[in-house]
Amino acid sequence: MPPLVRYKIPIIGHTFRYTFNCEKFLGQCRKEYGEMFSLYIWGRTITFVGKEYTHEVLSRSDVFDFGVLFRKMIPGDVMYTSIDNFGDLRSYGKMIRGSSISNKLNLYTERIQKSLYLATQKHIGDCNDQKVIYNIYSAITKIISASIANVFIGEEESEYDDVISTFAEFTKDIAVFFLIPPIFDLIFPGLQDFVKRIPIRLGLYNPVTRHVNTLIKHVKHQVDKRLREKQKYGDSWKRPTDLLQDFMEQKSFDPNNINYTALASNLSIFIFASIHSTSRACANVVVDLASRPEYMQELYEEQLEIHKKTDENGILPFESLKEMKNLDSFIRESLRFTGDVAALPHWVLKNHTFSNGLQVPKGHVVDIYSYDTYHDESLQGPNPTSFEPHRHNVPASKVGRNFLTFGGGKHMCPGRFLAINEIKFFMHNAILNYNIRTESGKIEDKFRLGPVALPSNNGIIFEKRAK
Image 1 (tube, rainbow, N blue to C red):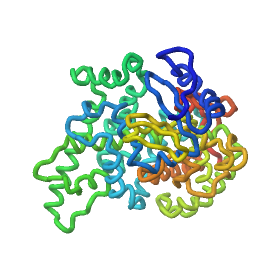
Image 2: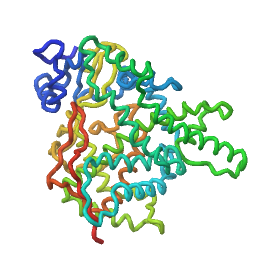
Image 3: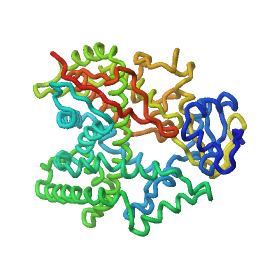
Image 4: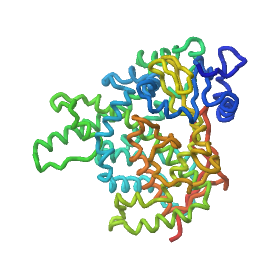
């Protein structure tokens, strides 16, 4: 077994140090115990693996499963009554890889740009007088939600405020299960899973109900409308391009017996998977650029040159995304600096012996010490702890041993291309139209909650760029 780090307080173990001083504590453990060590946190022994064994975890999906642990953290089995594949990452990945948002992203180019521009005007504005935005993550979430709603449920339904609210708020409402400390697991391992299902089973609280009901209303309207029009127009019917239509064309979809609740529930799971991660990444890019205005001019010049390729409606061609080399590298560096100390915990499906001879038993939890990868000079190049946006010469969406943002192995994030495209199109518009800087005039640090980091809530100044 990997060595268990010494602790003084029974039952509590390493919980407090992990929760309140995670970055420094895991660094000390790595230095003293090596590339693999175990901590006793919230009543459970968790093994952390460093850079040497990260991809052994990510590549062995027959042994290590993120989905099992996800289902333990989120009580989807009781929140959703109309679907039985909650947390099945394999089925979700298959659905995405077979959809238009994976292999036909060019079809969404114009819609993404239009929706991002309109939402930016609404939530940021022209900024003729400088505007200070606190909690930039919240504003970015609303902007990204408008664009992804257009891609997921179609242009017509994405115009409704209640749809945008559901896309923007769904993840926040579900996140309560992540934020509540698992104190009951200190009494007995697994007790927390049982307790948090009680109010849902009793009908006292279910965070998905309101959002799924909103989606059902709009999904039903679109599905019925599309079936009627397809029957009416036949071969001349113009097929809508969105994720909902992809769902309607799956083998399991029966037009004579439509399960609207199941359609809405599956859609909500994709909302959960996409909105927060894309919005957080985009907000980090904005804050990182605002904190380092010395990179603004070169990014502006690049985007200005690319903008010459827009059509009469101001829409960039899909191919222009590949020309955003400097922006691509800046985004990838920002993703590397996301700040999560440890990420992607996996459940051990069967006894496993690592290549170094250390063993973990079935039912164990293995977490990835991502800081070890991102702060390693052999993987990142010189000065790995400093923010250097020219460090990369590969696309921001590329997965590798030195880049864990989108996971790895068979189950790397299939939606990463959509996410990066959303960020690029938003930043293209933002760089061309605004001067962006921090209100403090300093580099803003992330807000840390245990091993997880979130964008700073401090003020970001947007000011209309003189042209």
